Image 1 (cartoon, rainbow, N blue to C red):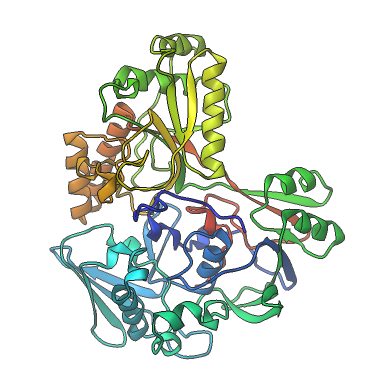
Image 2 (cartoon, rainbow, N blue to C red):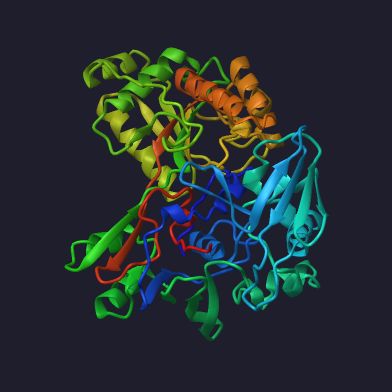
Length: 512
């Protein structure tokens, strides 16, 4: 099963994990009026749909999001909306979030959803270190049940991005509440989910401990039954599609896309990923490196921006539709020849540019494309794989590169403190300021933005953040690869046709 590696807050996979749990009905392909069964092909075996355990596998995460719901979700501008939550209030000191849940909501087995379920989910994370490693935000948060309708989250200090944390899928206490960690991780309910989402598991067919087929039926208005068939290889899914055994190839790879997209009566659906970038961090820590020179960073940006290359630069780390986005009004007024000549003034045959790259296919393909562009104009450069290892002495922690490329996912909240604040440069201690970037104005903007709950104050501070990112260039941001779906023209798969935040948001249903 294909999975994506991201930049993880816990240092193994650098990702803002909480960003993964958004369900946004505005992004979906309309499925009104569909009364048929649609069969989907998936490469690999499902692991777990438990929202506390599904972390890196794209399909597992996608399934988790249509089987479970969180307290909040996000609209197309990444502003929070109630999901299980009816409403919420925030105290004047921004330390107490009181959430009122919608009434009349039930689990798939008919049991009512209550604040007991919410408290159980968050407290289980806090009580189990192995789980908490992946959800560090629960430290310093107390969860108090006010009554069956209201739950209170009490923070040690003001933290305005907290609402984005509340998108985590909630588990039913009556199913999981008596389990220890061992039983929790091995439970049949990790796949035979009892959830609250747009769909519920009807049946699972297995042979010799391998799942062959899974059937999901809709909740709340959608009329499409989903059948998932699992295959070992992508080539098998292509054959199954040709034979008519499946209607849709999810997360289609290059081979499937090349083979089937030109077939008659076939749709290729491309879901752009707006909450992820392929980020090239530029090492600013060592004055001995060319990357520490502002003029070099500007020259490199201009070279890429004017190149005839598939590497598409984004203006900043925030997508244009985000509520906090401010256009830096980027203008490139020089030709590619002029940009190339400027860049070549920094070339040094004795010190080729070291292009670090993450171990995943996405990072490596972008790094190799950049290498080809540079070598094509005579700029000495070489690539070097950088392990996602934060240990002291490692290439990442010691910044043994001029630039390094990783796929990077952000939270729906625009807070990016951990990536750009000057206190976050020690990678061995969990810092994610990979560039070694330090700027007082950036620090001030990030600090003020994450402690204020005033919308306009936050927007102004994130405008400052974006300006600093563009002017100082601690990183360049490339558009992430889109998620591809291949479908028969007479089928309307429940996949996003517009921008999705995370690669795992491609499979989306209307749960409200």
